[in-house]
Image (tube, rainbow, N blue to C red):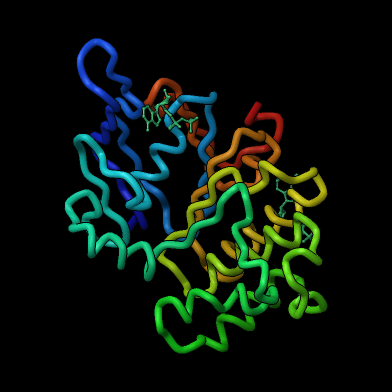
Length: 232
Ligand code: ADP
Ligand code: ADP
Protein backbone atom coordinates (compact mmCIF):
# COMPACT_ATOMS: atom_id res chain seq x y z
CA UNK A 1 0.00 0.00 0.00
CA UNK A 2 1.16 3.55 -0.69
CA UNK A 3 2.41 5.65 2.23
CA UNK A 4 0.40 8.65 1.01
CA UNK A 5 -2.39 9.17 -1.48
CA UNK A 6 -4.13 12.18 -2.92
CA UNK A 7 -7.46 11.98 -4.73
CA UNK A 8 -9.03 14.84 -6.63
CA UNK A 9 -6.82 17.31 -4.81
CA UNK A 10 -7.79 20.93 -5.45
CA UNK A 11 -6.32 23.97 -3.70
CA UNK A 12 -7.69 27.31 -4.77
CA UNK A 13 -6.50 30.65 -3.44
CA UNK A 14 -9.03 33.44 -3.53
CA UNK A 15 -12.31 33.29 -5.42
CA UNK A 16 -14.09 34.65 -8.45
CA UNK A 17 -12.28 35.71 -11.61
CA UNK A 18 -8.97 36.27 -9.77
CA UNK A 19 -8.92 32.81 -8.13
CA UNK A 20 -5.63 30.91 -8.47
CA UNK A 21 -5.93 27.15 -8.85
CA UNK A 22 -2.63 26.12 -7.27
CA UNK A 23 -3.75 22.47 -7.48
CA UNK A 24 -6.36 21.72 -10.11
CA UNK A 25 -7.11 18.03 -9.47
CA UNK A 26 -4.18 15.85 -8.45
CA UNK A 27 -4.36 12.07 -8.06
CA UNK A 28 -1.24 10.53 -6.64
CA UNK A 29 0.07 7.44 -4.84
CA UNK A 30 3.38 7.92 -3.02
CA UNK A 31 5.13 4.58 -2.78
CA UNK A 32 6.46 3.30 0.52
CA UNK A 33 10.22 2.96 0.88
CA UNK A 34 10.93 5.01 -2.24
CA UNK A 35 12.38 8.43 -3.04
CA UNK A 36 9.82 10.43 -5.03
CA UNK A 37 10.78 13.76 -6.60
CA UNK A 38 8.41 16.47 -7.76
CA UNK A 39 9.57 18.88 -10.45
CA UNK A 40 7.95 21.66 -12.41
CA UNK A 41 8.26 25.35 -13.16
CA UNK A 42 7.93 28.00 -10.48
CA UNK A 43 4.25 28.42 -9.60
CA UNK A 44 3.25 24.95 -10.88
CA UNK A 45 2.00 23.85 -7.44
CA UNK A 46 4.91 21.82 -6.05
CA UNK A 47 4.97 23.50 -2.64
CA UNK A 48 1.20 23.50 -2.35
CA UNK A 49 1.09 19.77 -3.14
CA UNK A 50 3.76 19.05 -0.54
CA UNK A 51 2.04 21.22 2.06
CA UNK A 52 -1.31 19.47 1.48
CA UNK A 53 0.30 16.01 1.70
CA UNK A 54 2.16 16.98 4.88
CA UNK A 55 -0.84 18.46 6.68
CA UNK A 56 0.58 22.00 6.58
CA UNK A 57 -2.21 23.25 4.33
CA UNK A 58 -5.80 22.15 3.77
CA UNK A 59 -7.11 21.29 0.32
CA UNK A 60 -10.14 23.16 -1.01
CA UNK A 61 -11.51 19.76 -2.04
CA UNK A 62 -10.29 16.22 -2.42
CA UNK A 63 -8.68 13.84 0.05
CA UNK A 64 -5.22 13.16 1.39
CA UNK A 65 -4.41 9.97 3.27
CA UNK A 66 -1.04 9.58 4.99
CA UNK A 67 -0.07 6.27 6.58
CA UNK A 68 -3.71 5.20 6.68
CA UNK A 69 -5.08 8.43 8.18
CA UNK A 70 -7.22 10.93 6.36
CA UNK A 71 -5.26 14.14 6.81
CA UNK A 72 -7.75 16.27 4.91
CA UNK A 73 -10.44 15.58 7.53
CA UNK A 74 -8.38 15.96 10.71
CA UNK A 75 -8.87 18.49 13.47
CA UNK A 76 -6.08 21.04 13.94
CA UNK A 77 -5.06 19.29 17.14
CA UNK A 78 -4.69 15.87 15.51
CA UNK A 79 -2.89 17.43 12.53
CA UNK A 80 -0.31 18.96 14.86
CA UNK A 81 0.21 15.56 16.46
CA UNK A 82 0.47 13.82 13.06
CA UNK A 83 3.12 16.29 11.88
CA UNK A 84 5.09 15.89 15.09
CA UNK A 85 4.92 12.10 15.34
CA UNK A 86 4.64 10.74 11.82
CA UNK A 87 6.15 13.24 9.39
CA UNK A 88 9.69 14.53 8.95
CA UNK A 89 10.50 17.89 7.34
CA UNK A 90 13.58 19.22 5.57
CA UNK A 91 13.64 22.80 4.26
CA UNK A 92 15.91 24.73 1.93
CA UNK A 93 17.23 26.74 4.90
CA UNK A 94 18.61 24.17 7.30
CA UNK A 95 16.68 25.43 10.36
CA UNK A 96 19.09 23.95 12.90
CA UNK A 97 19.27 25.23 16.47
CA UNK A 98 22.56 27.19 16.49
CA UNK A 99 23.31 26.67 20.19
CA UNK A 100 23.00 22.87 20.05
CA UNK A 101 25.60 20.42 18.73
CA UNK A 102 24.95 18.37 15.60
CA UNK A 103 24.06 15.33 17.73
CA UNK A 104 21.74 17.37 19.96
CA UNK A 105 20.01 18.74 16.86
CA UNK A 106 19.58 15.21 15.51
CA UNK A 107 18.01 13.91 18.74
CA UNK A 108 15.80 17.00 19.27
CA UNK A 109 12.63 15.35 17.84
CA UNK A 110 12.71 12.75 20.63
CA UNK A 111 12.71 15.59 23.20
CA UNK A 112 9.90 17.44 21.42
CA UNK A 113 7.74 14.31 21.16
CA UNK A 114 8.77 13.27 24.72
CA UNK A 115 9.81 9.89 23.42
CA UNK A 116 12.78 7.84 24.58
CA UNK A 117 15.74 7.93 22.18
CA UNK A 118 15.63 4.97 19.79
CA UNK A 119 19.33 4.12 20.18
CA UNK A 120 19.45 1.50 17.46
CA UNK A 121 17.87 3.72 14.83
CA UNK A 122 19.88 6.75 15.99
CA UNK A 123 23.08 4.74 15.51
CA UNK A 124 21.95 3.62 12.05
CA UNK A 125 21.07 7.19 11.04
CA UNK A 126 24.34 8.60 12.42
CA UNK A 127 26.24 5.86 10.59
CA UNK A 128 24.43 6.60 7.31
CA UNK A 129 24.86 10.36 7.58
CA UNK A 130 28.65 10.02 7.77
CA UNK A 131 29.33 12.81 10.28
CA UNK A 132 30.87 10.80 13.11
CA UNK A 133 33.75 13.26 13.57
CA UNK A 134 31.45 16.31 13.51
CA UNK A 135 28.75 15.32 15.99
CA UNK A 136 29.96 17.61 18.77
CA UNK A 137 30.23 20.63 16.45
CA UNK A 138 27.68 23.42 16.40
CA UNK A 139 25.96 24.25 13.07
CA UNK A 140 28.13 27.38 12.64
CA UNK A 141 31.20 25.13 12.52
CA UNK A 142 29.81 22.93 9.75
CA UNK A 143 29.66 23.34 5.97
CA UNK A 144 26.30 23.84 4.26
CA UNK A 145 26.23 20.22 3.09
CA UNK A 146 27.05 18.99 6.59
CA UNK A 147 24.34 21.20 8.11
CA UNK A 148 21.76 19.93 5.65
CA UNK A 149 22.78 16.33 6.38
CA UNK A 150 22.20 17.05 10.08
CA UNK A 151 18.77 18.47 9.20
CA UNK A 152 17.97 15.34 7.17
CA UNK A 153 19.16 13.07 9.98
CA UNK A 154 16.92 14.99 12.39
CA UNK A 155 13.96 14.52 10.03
CA UNK A 156 14.57 10.75 9.88
CA UNK A 157 15.54 9.89 13.41
CA UNK A 158 12.07 9.11 14.74
CA UNK A 159 11.29 6.80 11.77
CA UNK A 160 8.49 9.02 10.44
CA UNK A 161 6.05 7.48 7.98
CA UNK A 162 7.33 9.92 5.37
CA UNK A 163 9.92 12.68 5.09
CA UNK A 164 9.09 15.76 2.98
CA UNK A 165 12.06 17.73 1.68
CA UNK A 166 11.37 21.12 0.05
CA UNK A 167 14.29 22.11 -2.22
CA UNK A 168 16.79 20.41 0.14
CA UNK A 169 19.75 21.27 -2.11
CA UNK A 170 18.54 24.73 -3.15
CA UNK A 171 21.25 26.50 -1.13
CA UNK A 172 24.09 24.08 -1.84
CA UNK A 173 26.93 23.74 -4.34
CA UNK A 174 26.94 20.53 -6.37
CA UNK A 175 29.40 18.65 -4.14
CA UNK A 176 27.37 19.44 -1.01
CA UNK A 177 24.17 18.61 -2.87
CA UNK A 178 25.58 15.18 -3.68
CA UNK A 179 26.37 14.58 0.03
CA UNK A 180 22.78 15.39 0.95
CA UNK A 181 21.17 13.46 -1.91
CA UNK A 182 23.28 10.36 -1.41
CA UNK A 183 22.32 10.42 2.28
CA UNK A 184 18.62 10.67 1.37
CA UNK A 185 19.20 7.82 -1.10
CA UNK A 186 20.86 5.67 1.60
CA UNK A 187 18.04 6.43 4.03
CA UNK A 188 15.66 4.94 1.48
CA UNK A 189 17.85 1.99 0.44
CA UNK A 190 19.29 1.03 3.82
CA UNK A 191 16.73 2.28 6.34
CA UNK A 192 13.55 1.83 4.27
CA UNK A 193 12.55 5.47 4.69
CA UNK A 194 9.86 6.94 2.40
CA UNK A 195 10.91 10.37 1.09
CA UNK A 196 9.20 13.00 -1.07
CA UNK A 197 11.44 15.77 -2.39
CA UNK A 198 10.54 18.96 -4.24
CA UNK A 199 13.30 20.22 -6.50
CA UNK A 200 13.87 22.12 -9.71
CA UNK A 201 17.33 20.63 -10.19
CA UNK A 202 17.35 17.72 -12.68
CA UNK A 203 20.52 16.30 -11.11
CA UNK A 204 18.81 16.19 -7.72
CA UNK A 205 15.69 14.60 -9.24
CA UNK A 206 17.85 11.92 -10.87
CA UNK A 207 18.58 10.43 -7.42
CA UNK A 208 14.87 9.60 -7.07
CA UNK A 209 13.09 6.36 -7.95
CA UNK A 210 10.28 8.28 -9.58
CA UNK A 211 9.88 11.86 -10.78
CA UNK A 212 6.53 13.61 -11.10
CA UNK A 213 6.23 16.70 -13.27
CA UNK A 214 3.72 19.39 -12.36
CA UNK A 215 2.40 22.15 -14.59
CA UNK A 216 -0.48 24.52 -13.77
CA UNK A 217 -1.54 22.50 -10.73
CA UNK A 218 -1.66 19.12 -12.43
CA UNK A 219 0.66 16.13 -12.78
CA UNK A 220 1.42 16.16 -16.48
CA UNK A 221 4.13 13.49 -16.72
CA UNK A 222 6.15 11.05 -14.66
CA UNK A 223 9.18 8.86 -15.13
CA UNK A 224 10.65 5.95 -13.20
CA UNK A 225 14.37 5.25 -12.70
CA UNK A 226 15.36 8.70 -13.96
CA UNK A 227 18.79 9.71 -15.14
CA UNK A 228 20.01 13.32 -15.42
CA UNK A 229 19.32 13.11 -19.18
CA UNK A 230 15.76 11.79 -19.00
CA UNK A 231 14.76 14.34 -16.34
CA UNK A 232 15.79 17.33 -18.46
P1 ADP B 1 5.71 26.06 -6.79
O1 ADP B 1 6.06 25.47 -5.47
O2 ADP B 1 5.67 25.05 -7.90
O3 ADP B 1 6.53 27.25 -7.15
P2 ADP B 1 3.33 26.97 -5.42
O4 ADP B 1 2.66 25.77 -4.91
O5 ADP B 1 4.16 27.78 -4.47
O6 ADP B 1 4.21 26.58 -6.70
O7 ADP B 1 2.26 27.97 -6.05
C1 ADP B 1 1.26 27.55 -6.98
C2 ADP B 1 0.39 28.74 -7.34
O8 ADP B 1 -0.37 29.15 -6.20
C3 ADP B 1 1.15 29.98 -7.79
O9 ADP B 1 0.40 30.62 -8.79
C4 ADP B 1 1.21 30.81 -6.54
O10 ADP B 1 1.33 32.19 -6.86
C5 ADP B 1 -0.11 30.50 -5.87
N1 ADP B 1 -0.05 30.61 -4.41
C6 ADP B 1 0.73 29.88 -3.59
N2 ADP B 1 0.53 30.23 -2.31
C7 ADP B 1 -0.41 31.22 -2.33
C8 ADP B 1 -1.05 32.01 -1.33
N3 ADP B 1 -0.79 31.84 -0.03
N4 ADP B 1 -1.95 32.94 -1.73
C9 ADP B 1 -2.23 33.10 -3.03
N5 ADP B 1 -1.68 32.40 -4.02
C10 ADP B 1 -0.77 31.47 -3.68
P1 ADP C 1 28.76 8.40 -1.56
O1 ADP C 1 29.46 9.59 -2.18
O2 ADP C 1 28.09 8.69 -0.27
O3 ADP C 1 29.57 7.14 -1.56
P2 ADP C 1 27.45 7.27 -3.81
O4 ADP C 1 28.26 7.91 -4.89
O5 ADP C 1 27.72 5.84 -3.45
O6 ADP C 1 27.52 8.14 -2.50
O7 ADP C 1 25.93 7.45 -4.15
C1 ADP C 1 24.92 7.19 -3.21
C2 ADP C 1 23.66 6.88 -3.96
O8 ADP C 1 23.32 7.95 -4.83
C3 ADP C 1 23.79 5.63 -4.83
O9 ADP C 1 22.58 4.91 -4.74
C4 ADP C 1 23.97 6.18 -6.21
O10 ADP C 1 23.40 5.31 -7.18
C5 ADP C 1 23.22 7.49 -6.16
N1 ADP C 1 23.83 8.48 -7.05
C6 ADP C 1 25.10 8.94 -7.02
N2 ADP C 1 25.31 9.88 -7.97
C7 ADP C 1 24.12 10.02 -8.63
C8 ADP C 1 23.67 10.85 -9.71
N3 ADP C 1 24.45 11.75 -10.31
N4 ADP C 1 22.40 10.72 -10.10
C9 ADP C 1 21.59 9.85 -9.49
N5 ADP C 1 21.93 9.05 -8.46
C10 ADP C 1 23.19 9.12 -8.04
